[in-house]
Length: 244
Image 1 (cartoon, rainbow, N blue to C red):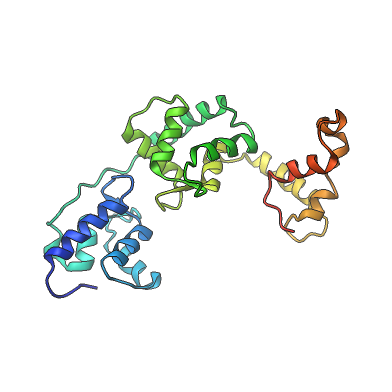
Image 2 (cartoon, rainbow, N blue to C red):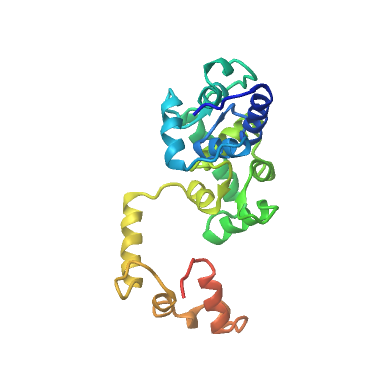
């Protein structure tokens, strides 16, 4: 998939777009980011056509293309040496886990012990209300947690949270990384609790399932008269994604 005709300005545009979508400044981009780059310089191809090329030129099978690999796909091998963008080494799994553990410990001190606490921290960090965190928002959250790490380490930490390599962190990615994987015993406990709630055996919990099990009469706020039963129920349901 090489583009014919004058290349100089297009190569400059490729460099510009590559750097624009390389949000972590790692010198490499994901499949989604590569497709965004191609779209900006006039290539409109479906994912099923782009992905085989991406994988073919991703020589180290890292899931990223650096500038040279991208340029070869678009313009041929002669363009690879132009506008080179240095590629940052991928952080090791051990280092990434150490960063995640350090950040997790700081967030626990700020109330990230429950779904509500984690959600609150995420919403505070989400300045633009996009329901996802870009790197500047994430960097701000790290600084506010009082975790003292370098910008490079923060970029590596961001990459550890960004599971789908989209260049942003959605709530599920944030929640999953902060909470960490569950032990087998805890997973079994969750399965048993889910089975008790899922009265119709559908595999999904709906409003009726939850209302049929959760008794708000014993909620302290209801007992003390600070909330009605309806308010307490709505507060409880707000911590879940509930289908009507």
